[in-house]
Length: 82
Picture 1: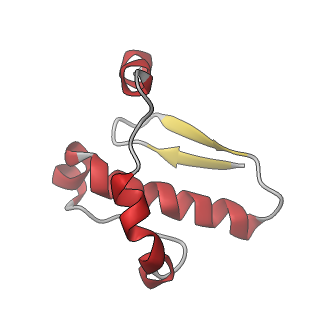
Picture 2: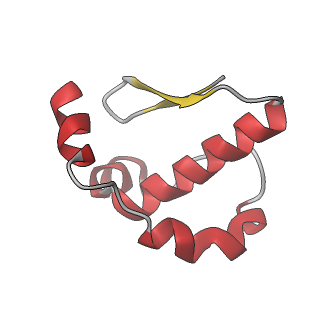
């Protein structure tokens, strides 16, 4: 299981995984996504979080992470749950 701690201290469940590496890489991808999309995170933490693996491992995925957005209405549901 992988959890991501948000800037407000709450946890986001990222799912259950077959092994630790798969969970860690999912965590890293979500961390990198947050750095691209959440300005509050960038201000509070200077834009960078610690990842489990080298950021260079995800260089080929950077553009996909940058352009991936919440589905319509999902951001509102996340904000309401906070």
